[in-house]
Image (tube, rainbow, N blue to C red; front, top):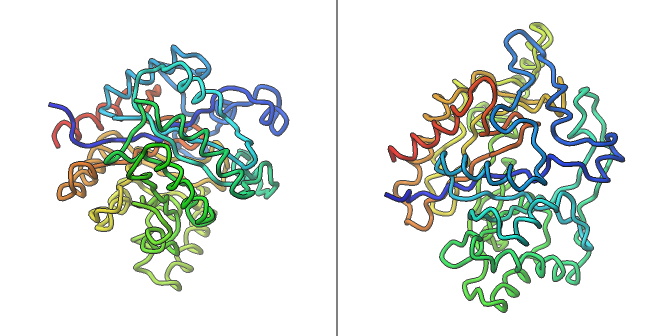
Length: 371
């Protein structure tokens, strides 16, 4: 029986050199550079993460992308949601992989796009743990000419038979729904209808902070939101403490980190995974977000946030909780976002490694099949 739940897995189209990264980080830099040199920061810290079946791949190789699809099918994943980078005035980065998928028709696997509309700063890639705010690439919104140029690219993807559509509407997630001008969204919607998508677009707002209200995003033109609860990990848990309590908790975490020589932003998946899905996710205009594991220290060192004790068994329980949140939603709205398929530099991936093998893949499939 075909799975009634759509599982859309975020996909990082990196893992091959680009001139910009060569300039910023050295010749030949890819995500694997930080992954390979990652260090264990305390006893029992699972680093470095070593890929198993696919090895340290180069995503320009179409055979690797086909192998990824076969694994995704094993896991019960419905589509890859490719991160897409458009910085304004036609400037794209990490565009080669998805462009090849679009141009060649391979692999023959459903997909959609998530616009990563944020500036790039050096702090996000500094595995030495040195805080730096150097701006590498600025996200801009130059105006309607830029918006139209961007849409002309997007519509080619929307018209692909593989593209995920919800009630006939092409699915498009916006990483930063606050900064994007409302006029961009309005015109994307208008141009989509002119292109033959009579119902417009299915726009999803990615909510990363408590100050972003769902109602404001819906008024802005979004159809749905998804809560990415990795900003403070346990956002519902911490909210109960109040502002003073959160401040004291932050000081306690820092002090504990120094005392036990452990990163202060470390959380136990066994305890906190229950807060990654909440009653908010039962609402019709909310898409639950499932997270197998997380460890940002390969990119940001001691300043990185991480989960410890994330296992396939606990991920299975987490997915079951998310699936329960979908029970009373209409069929077309039974969607899960999986963060992520292959974010190795964030310790946030489903692909096999030498510790768990295909454990997370099997855990997801088991939960979906039982659903």
